[in-house]
Length: 207
Ligand SMILES: Nc1nc2c(ncn2[C@@H]2O[C@H](COP(=O)(O)OP(=O)(O)O)[C@@H](O)[C@H]2O)c(=O)[nH]1
Ligand SMILES: Nc1ncnc2c1ncn2[C@@H]1O[C@H](COP(=O)(O)OP(=O)(O)O)[C@@H](O)[C@H]1O
Image 1 (tube, rainbow, N blue to C red):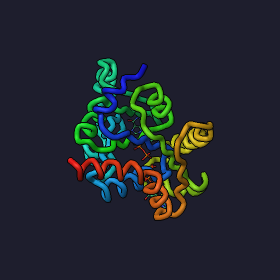
Image 2 (image 1 turned 60 degrees about the vertical axis):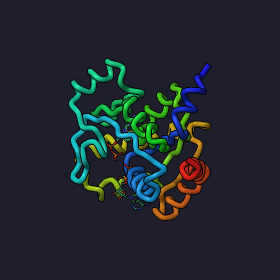
Image 3 (image 1 turned 120 degrees about the vertical axis):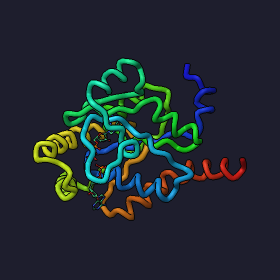
């Protein structure tokens, strides 16, 4: 039996975002959080990859060594963790609690392994998949982003193929958004979250 009391106390239902690297998750999430900063909070993951130009420790990720991260995982500090493209990534319990303590909708940006592992927990989020219009467009966007080496690009494109296949499994996601035109994708995203956004706004104005 799941403990509904602790969930009710944990605040609004979290939202998990997944989809291939380069699909546009960060772009859409940043827009969403900027427009609704009193509604959404980002679960800041840990990673062993290096920060990209413009990324900030503690805001985009907690950048850590593999040794430190493995020790924290062994210590039971993570809800889930995964190896992606040669690096460790994970959601700490503290990252989610920090958002829930503010009574915000907690947003998780995680890969497919993370989605599968979160499904085994009692977090009970809504699952949204962000997909590119095609593999060709995905590759172009990833190349134009200019953040990856040829080796990393190859790994990401391979993972994207696997991800896009796994995403087709019925029931894996509550909502699938194809990010072709950015403004249209953003509108669809807001529409999918409208009910949850209104719920949070209502509790804020009535308290
Ligand atoms: N399982 C899991 N995946 C994560 C986590 N944080 C980020 N990811 C995923 O790791 C992958 C790589 O992320 P990143 O290095 O930021 O590259 P990008 O997706 O190309 O911008 C993406 O699919 C993210 O969704 C996490 O805490 N857990
Ligand atoms: N709808 C879109 N049309 C064109 N370019 C896009 C669109 N959405 C995102 N991008 C660009 O594609 C690249 C990958 O997007 P990003 O948000 O980093 O993806 P992810 O977080 O899923 O890896 C970025 O350079 C971003 O500016």
